[in-house]
Length: 196
Image (cartoon, rainbow, N blue to C red; front, side):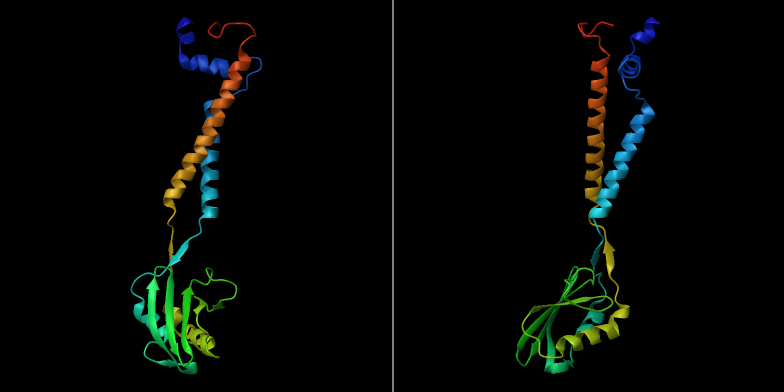
């Protein structure tokens, strides 16, 4: 029928799916490939983006108690300064031999050498702790940390969007190349491009 011949969708379908060397390709194939691209992009992003553990507000008094504010720890050290910074707790102790600094992080975020409690990795960041200070600090934290809560934060939602765009774009380009290759193989050799 002449009307069907002049429709671009009919011509595209005929050129892609009917020729001797053409590959069968339909709308369901396109949707399956695009869906696969989305799934792969999301899975790759989720694998690369672990939750970041942060310290929510309202736990300052609990943290000060864990660090020993106003008390003398073992080895005659007292808390000189403490600070909460997003995902870390910094503490500096005044000891007879000089200042000693520690950083507390999520237990999964500390180096292998860190002293660990159930909820913290205790990392020495400065000074030379006198014997017993690290053990005393860890024991004090363990005795109070059950009330402490980390908050999981997913800061990479924008990265998910870009991963999806990239994945779908790559599959889309592959489909266009595949369609163009199928169309060029349908044309008889020596025939003009526009003739049917």
